[in-house]
Image (cartoon, rainbow, N blue to C red; front, side):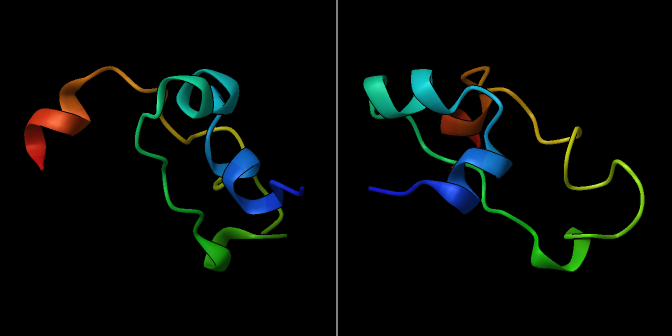
Length: 53
């Protein structure tokens, strides 16, 4: 199995996967952009995502 994009977009990927939590969507427009956008700014799951849906 490979988790390339989901792993990049979810800093807490293992927790999300184990607990069946929703995943962030990776933003390809930020890939290889030259700064931290898309690499260090994806949010951790807080529970607010579920109530917003």
